[in-house]
Length: 352
Image 1 (spheres, one colour):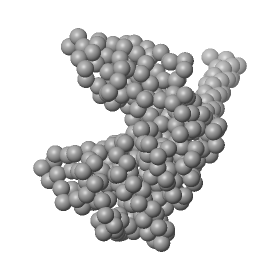
Image 2 (cartoon, rainbow, N blue to C red):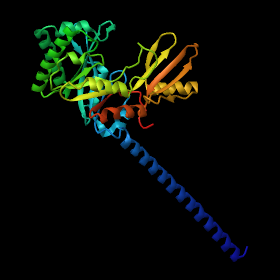
Image 3 (cartoon, rainbow, N blue to C red):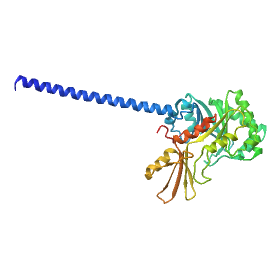
Image 4 (cartoon, rainbow, N blue to C red):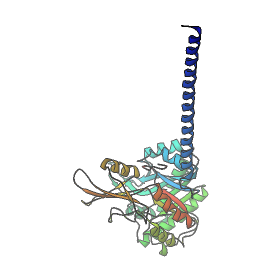
């Protein structure tokens, strides 16, 4: 082969190497660009979640603590977290579930206020339980001495673990006005003790509370539960909607001080055999996937719903909330001039 031919071959090989290198560089740049775009999109989604809300409070529950992604998605919008929940043992003493205690220790330095929630549930040594028990409330709140003892235990617990505040979630009082009177005395006395110990106080109220017949003091933050419009006690349907929330906002107008309105994640699965169970958004999405079906969105409430028949030939109807639902309901509350609480973290697909 002549020298000229050698030169041509070498030049051709050199050009091919340059072309291959150029293609490789272009692909690397494209990948980096796509990665940057994906990061930007994710950041924009994070920035836009609940975009009309500056502050949102929420709950973490001891039985569902795989919530890091949800905490990160809410980012700096989280003003407070309530750790749910302290219950009573069979001797009427307060007990923090071990898993909740461990999670609190892990998140103690996070940049939001931390409340410890007290509920009127009794968990016995044998594992049996009584949920939302009125009898224990009658026992603890019936006279000043009993209330003082209960308040001292609550304050001591909050101070021991260095919580920022206390949240009282005593439910199923319904229309028992005598118990309500003792409950309000308890709240007033607890608030004064909390104030003396640099602790804040939140009080949870159910939709059926006879607000117009009660005299709440100014000072605590009162949180109205704007959910369970439908549930195991009813036909299938949404947990909440705009009309329901606006009725509760109006109902709370004469309650003094700061008022917060809570909406709920997830939903329910009604079975035609009479059983009903709660479902998270993730669980609902899994059912859709397994049955190869799609959910529809209710125009009024923005809840998603679908029906399916399981392997045992039992018919189901599911209603649940996703991010779109929660943002819609939140806007109703924010536009009325109030803050939003989110029951609860766990099982949600924020930014999906």
